[in-house]
Image 1: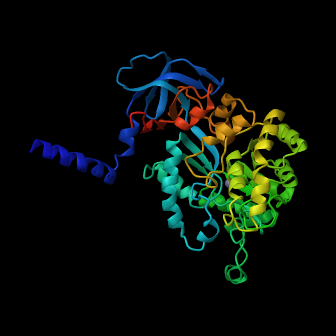
Image 2 (image 1 turned 120 degrees about the horizontal axis):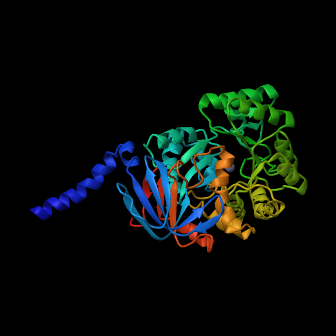
Image 3 (image 1 turned 90 degrees about the horizontal axis):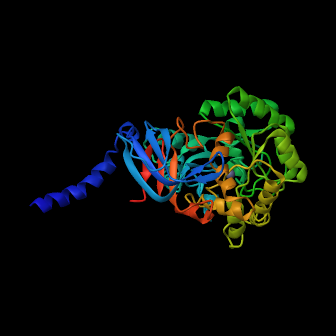
Amino acid sequence: MRLYIVLITALISPLALAAEPQPRETRAFEARALQCERLFDARSGKVLGAHTVVVREGKVAEVLPGIVPVAGAQAVDLSGHTCLPGWTDLHVHMTDESSAQSYSEGFRLDDVDYAYRSVGFARRTLMAGFTSVRDLGGHVAPHLRDAIASGIVEGPRIFAAGTSIATTGGHADPTNGFNSTLSHLLGPPGPTEGVINSIDDARQAVRQRYKEGSDVIKITATGGVLSYARSGDAPQFTVEEVKAIVDTAKDYGYRVAAHAHGTEGMKRAVMGGVTSIEHGTYMTDEVMSLMKEKGTWYVPTIYAGRFVAEKAKIDGYFPDVVRPKAARIGAEIQNTAARAYKAGVKIGFGTDMGVGPHGDNAREFLYMVEAGMPAAYALQAATIRAAEVLGVEDQGVIEAGKRADIIALPGDPVADIQNVMKVDFVMKDGMVYRTPQG
Ligand SMILES: [Zn+2]
């Protein structure tokens, strides 16, 4: 009888837990003492020896040298592990994942389908060690952000751009590739849909994003690889339009991220004052010096480049208009990242996930190291420097008073970068989502 009850309880309790999640607060405020065999100091880029990180009320309370007992805090054994600040991926699309069906599913799926799909993507991203992401385009993302922040869905903290801003026919014009009947029925998209063609439109588009609750502004300064359009690199905004966007964005405390492959469009975006260049494929020496002069960040997204170049080899994966762009532009990004690093352009970590499979984000570290960046530099790009790109001061380092976003992995990631693929402890805002014990 007793065994029977135990069995029933064992069967029922996980179900009951799944049906009724614990209130977020009671879990978040549990005090913990993380016993880290090594600690990555994001400021110096050095791996330090053993430390005990005390977490209370969602924040780092103390960082103590050695493994020491802490009264009133539950000890978490991370022997053999290196603790790091939770990573940030500065370029994702949480509601998409590319496939051979990507170009037609927009005609079949509703926003609610994308929203449900994003729940799994968000969870995979968090479990891979990414406690924050900047979502650069997708109007479901601000809603996912809110669902995660309120504890309904497990995922990284999201800084969402919402709808991207493009010009007519540009990379992010939502009606690219539509037939004439559909185009006629819908009419030309405007600033509300993220398409601008003047300075006034530019201001309206930014204000519309404010109304919709964006955290950051994304523009597509040149053509894109995956859009249903011929050019992947033509400039698509005037400098004046970029300036109008950046100036209006400042009114709302927004930073601007610019997708750019071609040189001229990239140059105009930098001149116009954007915070970061995304992809940056045909970045010339001239653009690199301009970026250094202006303090512009570069987020290479090597992952996406390699992924699309690989998929371009498969017949039918991409539409004919996209395939040559994917082969040509994709293959170039890693070389550009190598040159930009050597030239001293500031680099932030980003994958463009949603092109590739969510949860595999850490592979970008391997590609960055392949491109000649030291492992510690790559890890800083996803921690302390990513926080700088976002303009936030409460994350990116493990120090008293910062958010308790802490991950851990077996081994030393600076000695062997392959270890980044082995994250098995994840804490966000002091809540534990994953432990080596399972
Ligand atoms: Zn993107």
